[in-house]
Image (cartoon, one colour):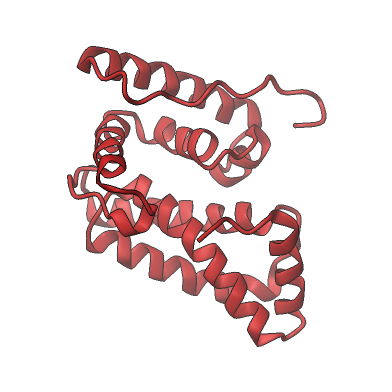
Length: 196
């Protein structure tokens, strides 16, 4: 499923808040893909992921009437997913990303892509959770520093700093493994006053 443009998600959210059941369904389906990937990167694979995704989707449905539109629906959903994943991680008291099974259907990749995802998940598991979260948001989901900061409950500059440190640690991890088949996303552009 191709990502739904931000403008279309915002329009769906407005229609859903106005009581359009079809728009609510379409919005939640579009956000499900983002939520599932986000939680999968943070928690790994297994039943904890399914529980966290379900809990997030219920929270999104319940919170939809109060959605103010201060952030894009995608950022709003990722913020709720991040909080849910953190709660799940604390509940399970286990190291996130420890599972080796890559759920190919979640990422819509072939077996070669699944092998790369397994390497990336092992590398992400080696990161401090705060750095991992920032990397996933900015490097994989391509959120701006301001959006990532909002999702993480911190400042934009803090999110950008965590991303840069995570990127450097991932590059070192991949270099130690001698795996050049994976590359890490480029560093975010420097913040301007507008981004903050």
